[in-house]
Length: 409
Ligand SMILES: [Zn+2]
Image 1 (cartoon, rainbow, N blue to C red):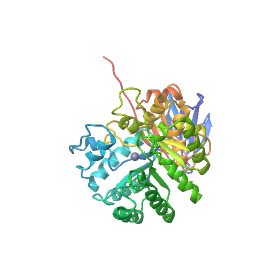
Image 2: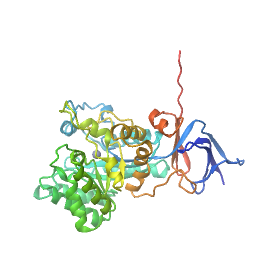
Image 3: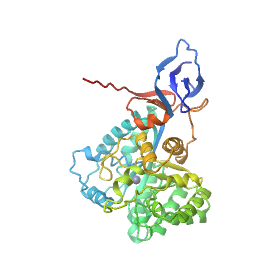
Image 4: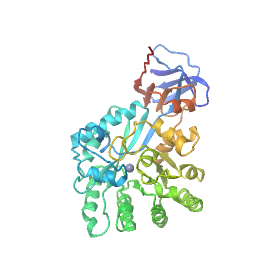
């Protein structure tokens, strides 16, 4: 039986300890002083803080890195409409999707992410063609024990009525070929409630979770999350349902936000908050007192709603920035949503695990060893610094180590 021993790591509490991981059970065996055994693999973790690994609950791996793909893709207005129209001129071949998605996932893994949910466009013109390379990538990541990937269908609009027939057909094909999660943008439909019913029926019939692009608008009148609450309330099952973005909730009065939060908590509907892309896309035409477009994650958490945060788009027409790094998202949550650093990291790790249907596991004896060690003096400063010096562990195995050498002259 061999072990990996993380020697002298700084815990989130500030205590310095060794962490022994049993390679067979893939679990943390000891946190404290570890007496080395002959077969132990020793990893020097001096001046490194050990975190539970990151979770990316909302990526778009079919579109990721399009800004670097060599195709002439521009979004001069920088808003959502500009991004959608830029995508009309883009060809997404399965090989290209695989190449960009794999490059992005390896960046994510190197930065400490071991569980990812990606959305994939399923719409007329594209069909279901981008699902296949993502399934191939998912299988490769699982076989190599590098990370776990969930694939959520992002169904094009319209979904409801006669005009939605083609998309409804594509949704059932997507389910047949093996997507993990049903999703779409009912708020873009002519008949949002019927579109929502179509997605819910499909998710219930297939026994799959559902994750919606609930809304991405600062328009207070588009509060689609109340349609979702009503529909879930009627059916009586909310677990496995996630509402992503929820931008218009950020624009509501406190009383409305709290009444929505109470119902979300009661029904078990999760919210995935996406600061990076919503800061990029929203409020472009507002020069004075611009809203941030971030769903009220602090308030939702205080009312017991299951919340997670993700990066959404990265280096594509929907967001030209993005480091595939949940430490960047955590930093944004501290800066732009005023979470404490521990709340911010929970939203980027344990919260994501729960929302994606996995047990929340911290750095504790008996937990599966999914960890990231980052250079830093303490927990908060490691998030603030966001050093590239990291060691990543998935299922008890070191999957990535990045060292940094800086020289001054
Ligand atoms: Zn998205």
